Amino acid sequence: MNRHDRDRDPFLFRTEQLCKLYPDGQVHAVEDVNISIRRGEYVAIMGPSGSGKSTLLNLLGALDRPTSGDVYFDGEPLSRVKNVDRMRSQTLGFVFQSFYLLPILTAIENVQVPMFEGPLSTSARIARAKELLDLVGLSHRINHMPQKLSVGERQRVAIARSLANEPIALLADEPTGNLDSVAAEGIFELFAHLHRKQGMTIVLITHDEEFGHRAQRTIRMQDGHIKSDMFTERKKIRTPLPPFAV
Amino acid sequence: MRFHTFVLKNVLRRRVRSSLTVVGMAVAVGAVVALVGISRGFERSFLAIYQRQKVDLIIQQRGVKQKLTSVLDAKLGDQIAKVQGVKTVNSGLVDFTSMDELGPVGVLVQGWEANSPLMTELNIVAGRHLDASDKNSVLLGERLATSLEKKAGDTINIFDNETYTIRGVFKGTTVYENGSMVVLISDLQRFMGRPDQVSGFTVVVDRPDDKAEIERIRHEIEAFGKNLEVTPTTEFVNSTTEILFIRAMAWLTSAIALVIGTVGMLNTMVMSVFERTREIGILRAIGWGRWRVVRMILMESILLSIVGGIVGTAGAVLLIHILSNQPAASGMIDSYVAPGVIAQGFIIALCVGLLGAAYPAYRGAQLLPTEALRHE
Image (cartoon, each protein chain N blue to C red):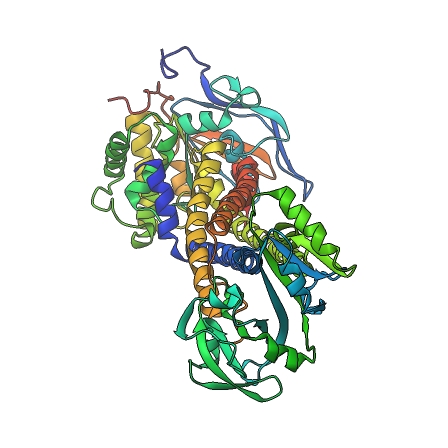
């Protein structure tokens, strides 16, 4: 029985009195935040700069440690997870505003980088990277270096890389922040596709109201607090499919 | 893509950073190999002067630890030769002279008897040996002849502008011999104003393996005068001031080279890894564990250290070779670099490279991904 099949906490992410205090500024980037995100949910986090969106996303993704409170992932508190690196590697995918591609690697090589932590053989890694680049519409650009790709294509490579280890959830921090509207539209379509077809849990930060409203749920933050938490989709949250289920 | 392919690409495709790191490592390794090589060569060559002569006993003025300042009566040689068990006795006078062509560098001058085995066994590569009738004649070491651009048959002005004829050029076994000159002892005595005086004697015994016999001969010779100090060659080599001085200098130079080289290598590697903290954050954020990050950096640093070691060692050997052929070196630098010195440079490069990379890699890997990503 694998992690996708067993009985699980209904919430993939849950926070309890989550606080993050940056010691230099003595400012609560996140204060007493309690949220729950179900499997397969598509959540947009919105709010002005400095409202704590990125800090919250980093805490959900175990990229950062809370000052107090805890994050529960799949019912398990992250503070008790022995190997957070492994948990992050095998269950979460990250997409950043600045893409963070390695400039010395081609598109297909960049996608393979996270797979070193997985069980795949070299040939299987290459096959999977090709499959993912095909999924994001870049099968014709696999051997291009990042600097030879448009910014939209770079973000697609970054999304393909985030899916390398078949994550349960995708966390994206302003993934379209550096893109023009056409490229941004393509990225949101890709997220919608991953959510709709593969049941991927998606939590993303965006400043764009229109894109924000395409998510099922919008959490608005201000001064480190949750200002509002609204379901923007009329229909019920559907039962998620396992990631990459055919 | 395999993990080690990724590591290799990381090194090869970041040409500027890799080149700068290699250059930094190479300079440090080169400094160590060159300085240690030169100082060890200096020591080795000096020791070889004594060891080559295959003598069993060295006789000098008591209390004098330097050949140059020792003064003994030349007639003592006849007495020593009569001691039972003594095979041959060779007298010698040593001095340094300066030459306009070589600037302030002094040239070692050895004064020997024409029939001394030291003279007759010299490996003459041009011209001939000196014989007893060769007044105002000189033999030049090969390197000295090259530096002076002189050959057998030419003349040179030495000893306060006296004209000497170069009778031959010899190839010595050490860099010092090759940078020295040999004259008849009578000429050197005249120049030094030390008629009938020598710096010392070397004695070859009939039974060199019989230690008791050597001890007996030693005591017998010492009985000739209170001012005589008779020392077995090995003991002499290890106690003479020149050797002790050379060893101290070699040790000091090597130690300074090692400290400077090590700090240089550490600095290069630490800086090259520190500036990758953000990259470490990216790798951690996309799923890499701490130890994979550390492994990647260490593998890269080994690769860069090896290349730096090769470039640095090759550069050092070339540099020593070029320097040793400069007139200013005047036979003072041996161009031979011992394999041990090269191995030492390599081992230091590898160890220090690894150490220099391990700390910042470990530190970077211990940071939370968000902390590493914020690093500028």
